[in-house]
Image (cartoon, rainbow, N blue to C red; front, side):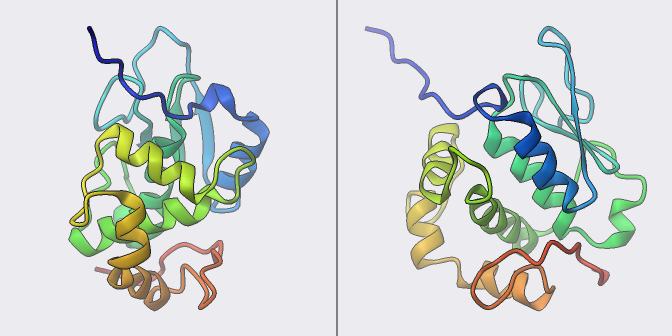
Length: 170
């Protein structure tokens, strides 16, 4: 009996205009490539989203969690790293946690996706967290990521996105 890979929500299951509008709030552009082509700027390859400058590169089979993750890297990185950005977003441990936290918050902004679905998709794809699941991490162990986002004015106290980019250096 073969075990199937759990299905995650892909761009093809969303209205492109919703994803495009969300990214545009951060000055990002969604660039959709052909199904049979590699994705420029993809750090992980295959169908994973790529990041080149202010462009999030995808295909219809790109997972939504990957699109939001790369977008959140752009939002959370220092301005100096945004200049010349191509493929590797870099960042440290605290920034990576903030990226994951913000992508969970942004899931609520897309019809058909929400925090719970985002966490399930992150788990299915293989994100790893100390408490064993994205949802448990988000709800019980991510205060440091929340504080990082607050410190950089990327979310409000009631966990609403500010729709701003990080403005301070590393």
